[in-house]
View (spheres, one colour):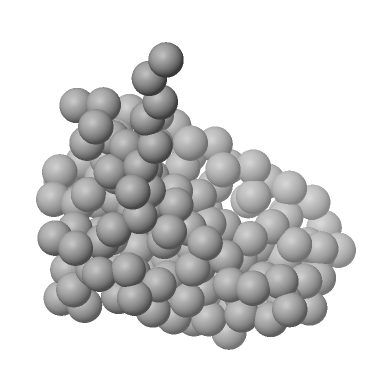
Length: 154
């Protein structure tokens, strides 16, 4: 039996972060968590490119262009969609997820989903450096692991 598993090692890797500016207090914290984790795991700061977009709905088209450049070993998408009083949350979160997934399925590099979809601002803050950790850090680790696995798979 043969098993494959990616190593979490950022040395020599070039990564991109595509991130939504909307709910900026949360997304700034996610961004910091991702950047700090990438650097801690060996990615050189100058090998991390960040692409800011206005909102979560804007993530997929920019992601498609970034991933299509074939310059990166992995791309993470970060954002925060917080439920409000209208169905807007449902439309935005669903379209962001579908679009990011579609790019990830055709990209040569791994695309990792790090868009928070929370019922309250408190839940989002908890997941962006609060009591639930920092999901930005989590997706950075996943991106490096997947990058190594993609390399093994050829």
